[in-house]
Image (cartoon, rainbow, N blue to C red; front, side, top):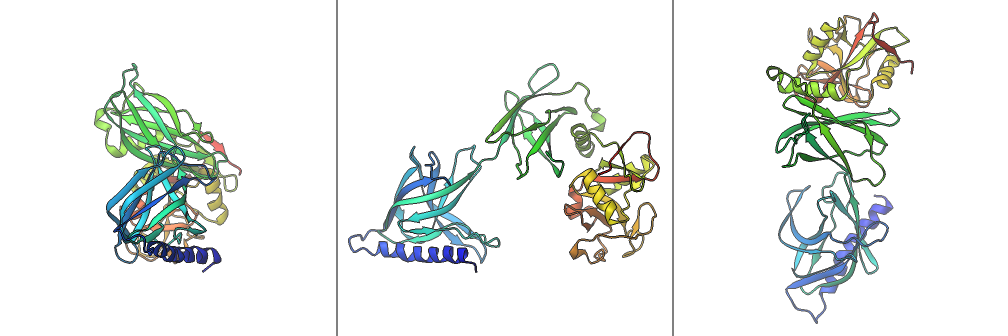
Length: 410
């Protein structure tokens, strides 16, 4: 146990003793308790208009706790102050805080009671990460200082209209968000569905990573598409607004199967790459969107190509620099004979880059195909199960160079 953890755990235990001592005053013989004080942020500024409550809880097994009624709640005033009275005495009490609809998450960092400061249990494998204590009958805690951290998640608010300007009201739309780091070092995407309101508006949260990013958001409704221009979030920006005008060339009704619509939206948002030439071996590569590895193989055949073969570490790293950090299918499989790995192209297997737990491919009868994960290491997957559901990209390779190409020499 490091010093910080020791200090926090010791603070928690001392807090129980102090609170019990406060309750032992002979002048107080009530069955209730009270707590008052103020809420501040990390810089010491008061936090107003948030709800702070004291809740009883019970332990459910060794790793989980569950809040129960009753629940005593108050709103902080303009100076961050609160007072909660007539709390039923209990040995199992915790603080709970929550903000308005724009404040997505509020975490208690510490509770200061006079000279004593209590901290939450931040052990990564513990779900008991709130500050818990006991309140004996007659306890009156005054001038408590609760320090909180408020994580605000930015949003996009957009209005959807048809090509003629008519709002798309009370309708379900499909959304896909594409993220790219500004230094081209990483990327990601996510999808969801939303409902527009009576004026055609919807609101969606934006994922924010530690590195600066730009975003592009695409939507689909009844086979029509629209997308935002690329945009970045400025520091402190909580909401960005757009008008999304659907195009006038929808997917034919008989072709609007969910997987085809998803693929069409992905291609509309992030058009398929042209063939990219690796200057080391002269081969051409292309990233595609796919519903499954079977779909990827079908597309490869149509392109007179095969799923990528990776023959050395240099090629493995070049693929990452050219196509980013997303997971993708490669051509390695042992479908023909369990444990005998072979490339889709028919090339001999001269190099592997298995993830540590794979043990040279895992020798698992269910896992016949391979993806490259976020760490650039290879992972076996079972068709139709687990991670295979979430891998929607593949890399194709051709030994000859198609007419439309670009050269990557990084």
